Length: 317
Image 1 (cartoon, rainbow, N blue to C red):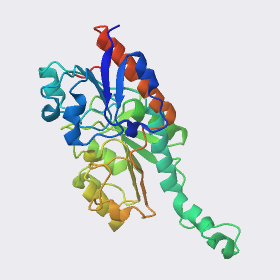
Image 2 (cartoon, helix red, strand yellow; image 1 turned 180 degrees about the horizontal axis):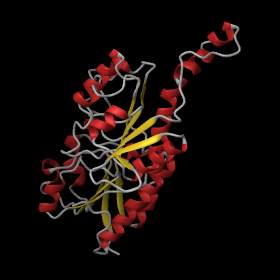
Image 3 (tube, rainbow, N blue to C red; image 1 turned 120 degrees about the horizontal axis):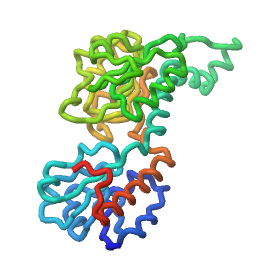
């Protein structure tokens, strides 16, 4: 098999515990923990294959390079100018389904934590107020069972389906927005999804069609006690409007793992809410259970092998 020159540009985003040595079986590997934009052209100047996670690749850094294949360690590939790559003969492959269990697990964890007010209840034990209170139990803030509530799901791919299965197991009615209605689930339009959901979890890929899906207008349709969870892409929501809704108490809770700017800076609308008891913000980690990252690497190696053999596998170009 042809031996390729492989450049890994942002290995640190894959976790320092992930062993990249299996890549040695398919090429000569150069690993960079991180790569600043101005460093990218030089680092890919001798590479046949570029492996990335969050790095942006487009004409500005790919033009004139010998790159033949881009492997993204993700399902989403909105950080790559796929149209330009296609027109210049650069193959692009992603990884599908590797993080389904990991993302679904965090989605449900956020929903349960916010519903049960775990942050407040655990804090009462940590700060000693439960001990000092002299009462055997504490039941404020009030929490409610999920059974009988409506869980809305925007995007019903592998992750959305997994979340839906768990929601049903908890006794929820599940309603779904997806572009192509599907038998076996209750499909509704986006506005109905927002109006009827007690929990709304978003699992949409980012595209021009989904950008701003949860707009200020749709946020205004949400129930006052509704919990919104976004584990998809930051830009599928109006982040400023979500932050304002949480501050004003017009939604019940907000769980977010993804942001339009990552890491989000101090001027981001969520920054001032990071200590809010009704918020659960995580650092884009939903996809990254150890098992999911191992699967992701294994799939990327299979993508490279397929490319060398002239086969199309997980290609998006």
